[in-house]
Amino acid sequence: MGSSGRKVDWYSISKRVHRDYKGKIEVVPKVPIKKLQDFAIYYTPGVAGPSREIAGDKDLSFEYTLRWNYAAVISDGTRVLGLGNIGPEAGLPVMEGKALLFKYLGGVDAVPLVINARDPEKFIMVVKAVEPSFGAINLEDIESPKCFYILDKLNELLEIPVWHDDQQGTALVTLAGLINALKIVGKKLDQVRIAFIGAGAANLNNFKYIVKAGGDPSKMILVDVNGILHMNRKDIEEIRKNNPWLYEAVKITNPEGRTGGIPEAMKDADVVIAASAPGPGIIKKEWIKLMRDNPIVFTLANPVPEIWPWEAKEAGARIVATGRSDFPNQINNSLGFPAVFRGVLSVRARKMTDEMFLAAAYAIAGYAEKKGLSEEYIVPTMDDAEMYVEEALAVALKAIEIGVARRKPSREELEEEIRELIYKPKKYMAIALGYNYIPIKKSYPEKL
Image 1 (cartoon, rainbow, N blue to C red):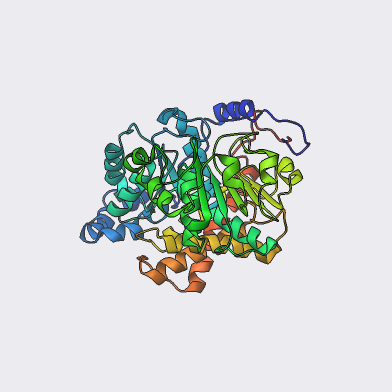
Image 2: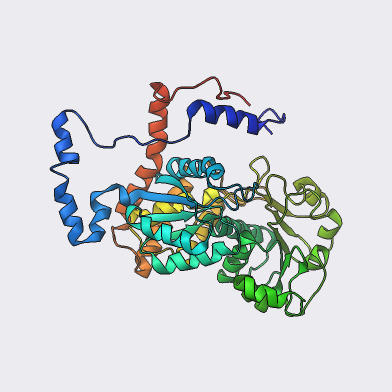
């Protein structure tokens, strides 16, 4: 829906804009070039100076080059948005869009890198091979369950942070939203019963990080396409062999061995977190009525949530969140990854840890609480730059605290740097538009 309330054909508009602009990002110089002799500094012979220094200490590449602020958005195109296995070339517009968000929201120089490497070992080899060029890696749109293996293995092998946004990004904002939703309804995280509808990469990580934040797995139930997961299900041995990450979750959830499907999982639940198939109709109104008082319902499927928000409210849901921007409480991973990467890059972190993840989630939740929580405001929105500053600072300080930072500036210095980097792309955009360096072409919709 557009601002006027009418339905907008985003697909057709996007095709026209992409074709007209021939992509969304480009490389521009960041050093002054006033005379030809300047290239003797930036290239040969002068560049041999920093190269010799780096040869003696590889970490100096973070001081002498763009690596300190450079991230790769890497995908094999096997699980793109709601499009599925469309291949790396078709995934490139998505990765480029992600790189644009990195820059505009977090001040991070990101490059899309789609690769023909569907075999997980080959994928890992490629990422390991390009590690020296980057300060952090964002994995994107990789099919489950191999995405779990790839993330775990790269975290072992690489000396830079590795993040999978479809796992950690969604979970980060889900956790922040849940923390605040529970404050509104007056319930405690370690006491609520939670039904997870869908057991793919997003919801397995929602589960993982809610548990790490203090949720009780014995009060949780997972549902996949075959129904409620429990240790006596006929396919449990197959799950153990093919998806050990899911199997480990099944072992510590649903101790009563409840069986059935979505309605049975939702019965007596305080919270439903759905990241399954696009709706509507995946979750029915009558099933929400089976939940406890003041139910919290997160329906995160795109482009259509598992149940329309108004239907969930009519059925008694106290707080409803979706993945869409045209409804209140958007669980949008764009609230997470730009600031997380800003934080890890600003301190040249070697790893992305769960402690840093939780610091980001608490920062998002705390910022929204300062602004004033309500049933229709449990997380901030993407247009609040100061939220990104606070979140990035929390991540950076946690990295220093736990000893994974190469660089350890003072809090004041760090906050000043982060704020400048986050606001700089917005200032640049104003200048570029004002001087027509970025032209407004006919395909760009001024009004929607």
